[in-house]
Image (cartoon, rainbow, N blue to C red; front, top):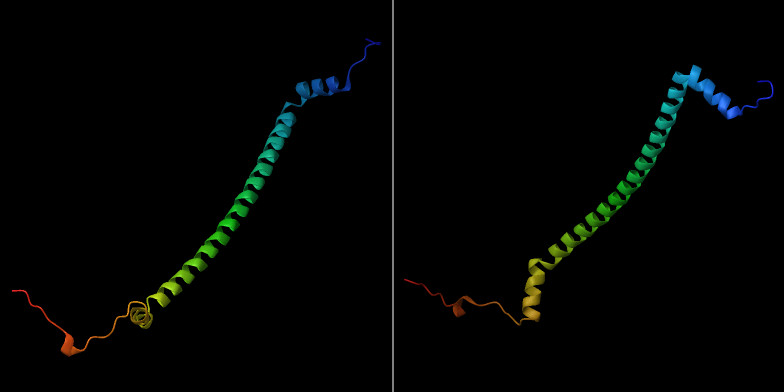
Length: 105
């Protein structure tokens, strides 16, 4: 036994398995927990970035929708419709004397 050489890793591992099972289990649990914390933090950051992108997209779509509503209101305005009817379709107002009323029996 005097000339034997033991590896340091082997001696430490043997001591841990013989005398330190609970600290070894706690160390393993802490390492697993740390990995889960890092993974969860990374996923949270990715989801937060995706949410911010979606909020920006929603805001852009909301602005576009409001502009379309304004454009629809402008195009559907009575005076504009009347102007297009007169200029492009050459329509005109009818006098009461020119109206013909047809009644079906």
